[in-house]
Image (cartoon, rainbow, N blue to C red):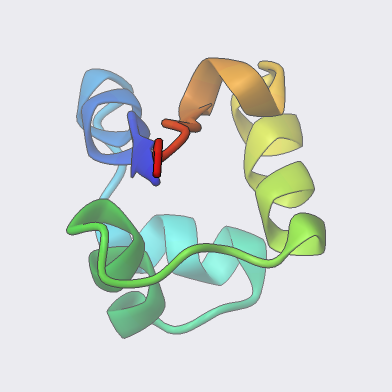
Length: 67
């Protein structure tokens, strides 16, 4: 799943460490989310959306895989 987390974080001048502290996760978790190596739990996605005052779907882009 793609996301706009890094873009939004940088627009607001927030470090990965600051965002991690605000969300109660590690800096490594934020880095992994930004690089697409990790998809957040629903709870974490909701916390991120609330932090940025946006909808989850405005931050995380779901791309359906066709078979």
